[in-house]
Amino acid sequence: MTGDMDYGKLEQTFGIRFSQQEHAILTVNAADLLRADAMQQFLDEYAPLLKAHTMDAAGAIFGSTFGSFALGYQAAMSLYNQRLIVSPEQITLQLISMGTYYKIAFCMPEAVEAGPEGEARADWVQQSLASFYSQTILPLFRSIADISGIPIGHLWGQMPTYSNYYIDYLLGQLDDCSIKNRLADDYELLRQLDPAIMERPKNPFTVKPRWIEDLRDSNKQMRMKNVCCMYYKTGSNDYCFSCPKLKESDRAARREAAREAQLAAAATGN
Image 1 (cartoon, rainbow, N blue to C red):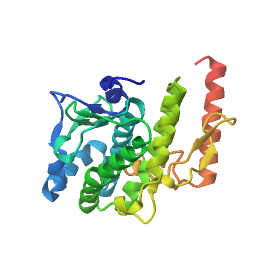
Image 2 (cartoon, one colour; image 1 turned 180 degrees about the horizontal axis):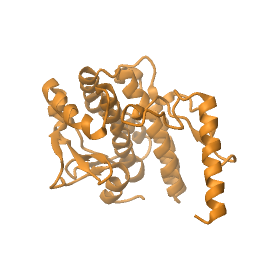
Image 3 (cartoon, rainbow, N blue to C red; image 1 turned 90 degrees about the horizontal axis):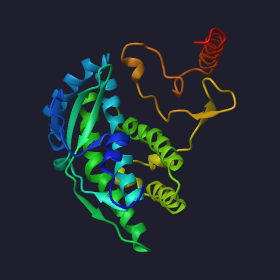
């Protein structure tokens, strides 16, 4: 994954589209969502589709979609050395039905800027990320927090969950060691950004991962989510297995039940 920009890969992996879907449930320009009335209308329509019990849950889940979008922006630089030209005015969000669930697609023009090579590249990456997070993500997070009531720190807290997942995923997909190294180096540059850019006391991407035993395989470890994603407020009332709010005794019980079900299925051939 290097050379010319693979727009299809960005759409498939990160939900970044370069054309709008005709039959979207809702289409809105990101710049409009900086207005309180537009964000209120969006969340009012989004929350029932999520079966969200509270507006803060809708805000948290909406905010979480920016995790994959942000990593798509960074992946374009790391994999192709090209920067997507994005600003709230250039981004259109579409709420799309996938049959059994709903997703947010981020639509924008096929506009990119080639990055430099050599020593100048690190500055270009950091300046690009600083601009992206301060001028695109931060204003939208402020708006989500203001209308939904979810603390803006919670929105930032969700970002490392997604970034760690996608960095691991991409590293596992790559064969070219030079691109792997560039991806890892660029992620470290993100972790070195001044937290003031995000109006945080600490850079949220520097949080240390916490590991738990995998749900079904005792020989594997998985990351605990950095903060609760608040899906438990959308119907089931159950915390995710990797939620930091879940009691360890409940996590162990859920792990045991999953493994018993796995053994039973194997015994019956299902």
